[in-house]
Image (tube, rainbow, N blue to C red; front, side):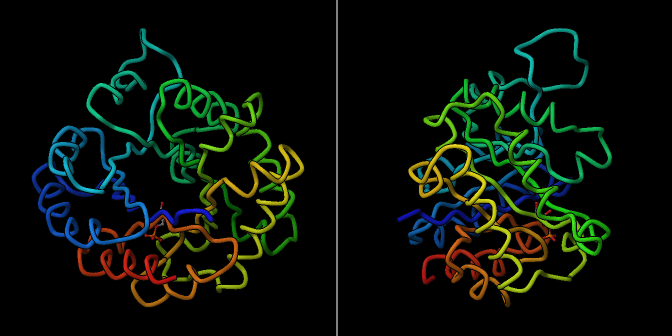
Length: 252
Ligand code: 13P
């Protein structure tokens, strides 16, 4: 049985004090939940977020990190820096980073390896564009993204990886994949994991859905056999909505 995971990706929203206020509003619901709860915050919010979440069930995640240990990489943040402030997860390869910041399958792989080396759980994002879905190459594309992200990673480490299926056409558009569409792809990703590592890893690995998940559609998505949680953008910024999603995961 996989423990469900509800992760709010704040993206470039919330100042440190706004982030603390939001964490305080969701704490009680998170503590009562049977799922894992994670907030993914901008770098500058991380120390305050860790402090605010201290003693609660909420874990704090970065939204990105660099793959080198240290050096001349102006503006970048290393895994050791994240670890020292108490960060335990990081998003890797979000489609916004792939699209706007030249993230590639190679850097996604290097970052995933580096996160695991530092005991940080990588939430690796994959997902097709509308054009890819309409031209029938979505499954091949996602299989490639998954395989390249996990290149060189042992079975033991792969069990710790979280994959988030986020169809690009559903992100921030209000256009959610149907329960069946989302589950079909998450099940397909699990098949790819089985082919790469066998059923033990595939049965352990958590696969999330992301893309306009909200208080209204979360229960249906989270009830699907292969959807182990959600990576939530817009709806994670509103405490009541995020709490409804956390409760939907508890009741799924
Ligand atoms: P929305 O929930 O705003 O569509 O964003 C999804 C997402 O990109 C989470 O990483």
